[in-house]
Image (cartoon, rainbow, N blue to C red):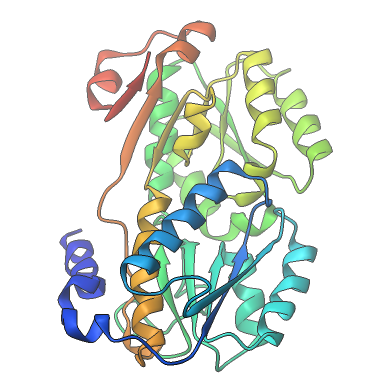
Length: 326
């Protein structure tokens, strides 16, 4: 795990001479962003602001020497495919993309425009890069979670609801390939019957959770999936309605009333992405910029929600939590 700190150090902009970073180009540069969320998403607003602030600190200011073109997919694969083509057609200097299936559309669209990806979990297995240390093509970026993380999520569910013997793995089908095999193995070791439930729209989310609620001793697992960001209001309302324990991979879900999450802060990825964009705009190649892995994971627990669900939080889980909402 020490490799994370080493790779993060390689990717930091602090290692680059201040004088070189201060040099200003004499032409407007263009950055495209393929967002996996909706335009009015509060989380996306925060993340994009983090990116803009990071770029500004490095001398790239919108309207002066930088133009940022953002396109929102609203969690829909069909829309993401169309706007990926649109962004590529703009011929920007760099494109940033969120989420594995959406980055795949960008990769299919260009083999020459540099692409910086975020919120991707298996860039090697997805064919985005040759290796984490040496990407080798026109893509590089930031890994969000490793597959083994599913064991931690399921373990948290079992800790807070010891009687739990079944769990639903709810996500867009595109999120299955990487996470579900590891989750299935971890669930078996914990005595949990884990069932995948593919969902792509609001109606499927509601129908799925309604069905799960009819099975006793059930819980919900939501792996990283930007589709769930679009429908998180529905997810949280139904989990509360049926008093279902749920574990998430995003802190925002817990802040909004979800039970608990084990996550890495996506804002850190946007801060680091600003550094990679800067380095590419100044002439470096994605092939030479290593893919970075998270250096820190955080446990957050909502005690108010636990009480509303009738759950007693075990001391071990409470002590291990980095943040508690009371």
